Amino acid sequence: MSLDLVLGFTQALALTMSVAFVTYVFVIVVPYLRRKPAPTGAPESLEWHFFVPCRDEEAVIGGTIRYLRETFPIAHVWVIDDDSDDSTAGVVRTLKRGDGVRDPQIHLVQRQRPYARTGKGNALNDAYRTLKLWMGKRADTDRAIVVVVDADGRPAPNCLEVCAAAHLFGNPKIGAVQVDVRMINAGTPQPGVSRWRRAFGAGLVRMQDLEFRTAIAAIQMSRGATGTISMGGNGQFTRLSALDSIAGPAGSPWRGSLLEDFELGVHLLTEGWHTGFTLDTHVNQEALYSLRRFLAQRTRWGQGTMQCMRYLRRIWDSEHLTTLGAAEMMYYLAQPWMQLLGTLIYPIPMVMMAYRFVLSPSEVVTWFVDGAWVLFTVYGAFGLLPFVLWGPVYRARCVSVGFWKSIAYGLGYALYIYTFYITSWRALIRLVRGHNGWTKTRRNEERLTGKVALDV
Image (cartoon, rainbow, N blue to C red; front, top):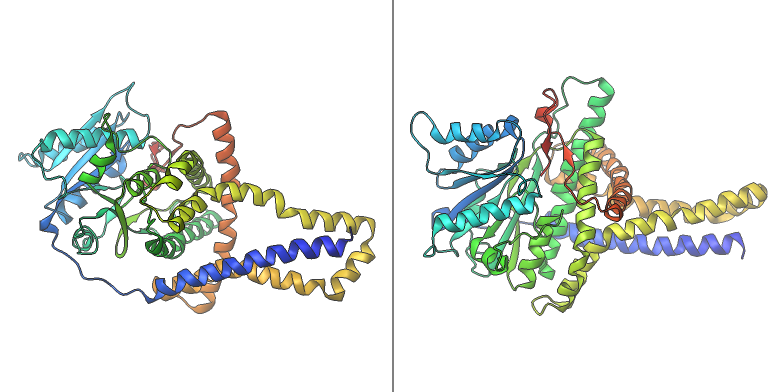
């Protein structure tokens, strides 16, 4: 088979896929850019409970509790200490006592080994069962909302009134709401490191902020049409009665996957609940400066997605999901596997061309000069466009920067996406080896102390 035929076919196929992807990106970008704020609701009409899972979070938990209590005085704060080796529990007790006056809205749920340190989902399950006992059998579980917040999370001050709106928890069919996620340290360089590391870390943080505030947010909005809005681990609001409906005899709404947030959404959707997403409020969290810690985090997410493949039959057979909705969820679950396949298929044309060049360099040069360069140029443009586009979108909705800087952000995002091919292989290796535990990383605040925390 001739070189031009093989390469022409593979490039044409890749170009077709790229055009389809560009079309998809434009379809989800338009409603994202045209979105208008929705009316808010009355937070007093609901009962709010913040769940804060912790393991060795002494460095950040005090500030988080103070922020939650001062910003949301009507809410209860449930701190789940997963048998920390540091003084996490002591910090909670001190704040609960206050200045001699006990704060009845701060609660400490303590787990102890060997039952502790078995994953974020199990920690949340313990808090769920404790909340149920505390509320009693006569509690109005339709009014109670459980909010999962990371130990360093900062929900926006308006999040309760936004989530209480008529189209969100004001609608009794809504079982869960995910709010927008933003990186609080975007634009803040990492202190105490070399100039190169500071520049690289700032760029990595910026890409995480761009990813969540544009691409992920637009995808979530598009899922409103398919009825498959998914949950995130931070800023996840769930109605207590919805958790009750999927908890089962063991009282465990969370089922143990490393991607416990998406897993929770699968069970809620297949049980018949609706889910919502809003850009009218957000939760702030810290992005990672370190590439090593970032890869560890995304490896865990990829492995959790692979674990959730066991729900394919449940998704497809659910009478509560449309065919389009089931297909969208299955497409999401296929992402890490498609990335694995892509790393095997995409290099084939280049390898073949390099091999042919070694055998007959003049033939390859002639083929390229006679018109093949056009195909490569078009393919490259369409391959980059779906990712570069997010830079100007980020500029239009999120940050005030110049146009060319937004293009640079888009090009950086295109490179950033390639890290997922690495993490998919790492996730597969961990899955094959049976390494299903949580990957530990350090929070940014702990860089100088050397204390290790679970990145939940």
